[in-house]
Length: 104
Image 1 (cartoon, rainbow, N blue to C red):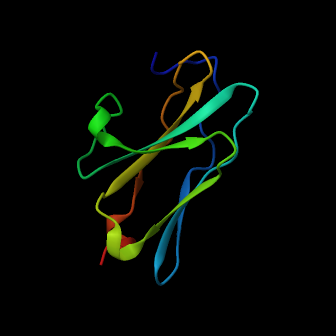
Image 2 (image 1 turned 45 degrees about the vertical axis):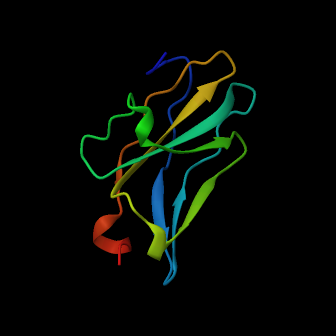
């Protein structure tokens, strides 16, 4: 179920960049409630988290960042959600636009 309000929403989702990498960061979720973190990416806004084609990665709940090589970045917009052990998904974090600063 998407938009589950019993899960806390992702906090502090933001981007850092280096000359060669883009790093998406967020605050770690409560691991007793969250099993996985789902990273979504799209070249279109609004970013549709209901479309499985937009899933970039499924990460373990202790993950607090995701690094991408600048030359390999293919999406413009990114967001994350948290997934509980029962399959419920939190609301998405505010979307980060990486095109203006990260794409070659």
